[in-house]
Image 1 (tube, one colour):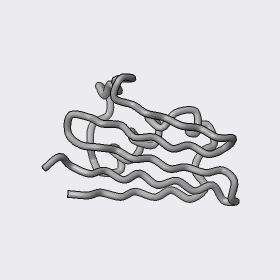
Image 2 (cartoon, helix red, strand yellow; image 1 turned 45 degrees about the vertical axis):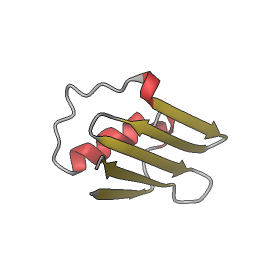
Image 3 (cartoon, helix red, strand yellow; image 1 turned 90 degrees about the vertical axis):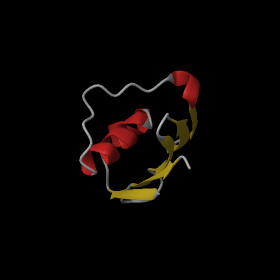
Image 4 (tube, rainbow, N blue to C red; image 1 turned 60 degrees about the horizontal axis):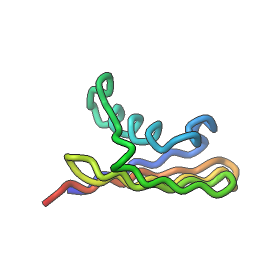
Length: 84
């Protein structure tokens, strides 16, 4: 199963961490995000200027986040792939 969520003109403070995008994608899909914990060991995050890319290997699957503030409006996408 693959799930994709895209944002155009998102809040620029989200670029602090990809966990903001993952939680927002979870909430948009109807998931409860009150007790969500992101293990730093499972998170690979790369930033370059105003661009962000990360991979989070959770117990339920893999989240990939790509975000850029270089273009106006800002653009971001979250891709979730479930473990087989």
